Length: 253
Image (cartoon, rainbow, N blue to C red):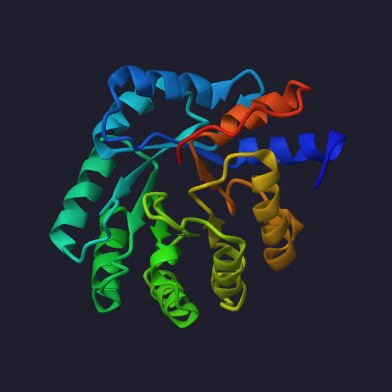
């Protein structure tokens, strides 16, 4: 486990690559205001906030231009209803977001190409992250197929999980997604990776930073190629950067 300057360097990378997330059903506008204040905090800014489509306009109005707004589509269930996914995407685009995190229909992979292609067209010019829900796919062959579908549809990022299922990001799943990117000549120089769910400490984040560097190269550990989806991680990042040993892991995504 890293410590001292190494842990602080990991914390700085994690902060720069953080998609600070609030996807609770009970959240209020005040919760989003608090999220946005924290996203541009005393130690630097997160890469983005990730919210429900209905909260995009508020988040965008509160954040500096350097912090992107991402929102979720076809979330969290990953159904196969293309029209539902398009309604979500249109709401996100119209509200001024820069990024769309769409759940691939992981229970019905045959439906994935058409749904992802439609969403890609609907958010042309925005960053598209495709959530594979790897903890539900389980089978490595199915994960490879889902990766291929996402890449063929024009995904800008492969994302592990919604954070709403029993198994979220794992190093095994992360390596599978990273390898899919590395093995694709067109994807390797441009497509990014986003682990999400269960990443609550700087040490947790460091595992995924190291994997990105191992598979895609040291230069890939930056916000254009790597994001971390988390709600509780920022507490530990700030504790480490303040010179404390680290905060108690926060509950949540």
